[in-house]
Length: 316
Image (cartoon, rainbow, N blue to C red):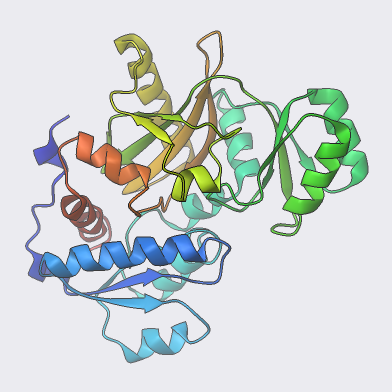
């Protein structure tokens, strides 16, 4: 992989006036504000005519009032990462960064993403959907413990919990239901966790994650100073290639475009298990895609320009 192949060759003037969309009203608003402001600063420092929009109830009027040649989407979660913003921009004729409507909507739905992966024979942990106490009982009987409970349409590990008993499962389902009407429970995979970013069709160096928390939760992702990131990831060459190939297949199955990040577990037998794919990954000072890009030879500004350049090449 060559860093030169990843870098944007587009003159900054060709981007026109760029709206950086961030904030929004999802549970990931605070992370999106940090990501969006970092992206905005990087674009402006590079000489791009960029401005920010904190997406709220007045967004449509902003869209009509401002001259926008293209949009850089840094909205995490529902309302920005789930296909709705992509559809609105398509209707408005405004090119945008990242995945299109279908891939965005699919990747945001953890349950349906897993169903697509399963249909193609890609490995993902056994799971069930929870909508009642009876569902919790059935899942406990079928999957055993430990388990991980997740809102099906949230990111940043919001509403997630590891559970060891039926009582804990019911309580975690009730807590996750505050964030999402659809809740997913998944077989717990014991072993190392990896995250792998894809940029403009190329796989960036995988990152191995370590945390003293029970899993890589919100605090470990954005607040903790004791989270460990290993690049190189420590895998043997053959296993690292297997992980990269699995990442490519996972992204192709969903139909991602431009950039994405896939989260993967490895069990004691060395088997990899796909967890989820993120189509608008974090861009904060704790975020993983900038770390992977740096390991590939791209600084933050070069990464941002590469993502923006894809919107020009893919959507005109």
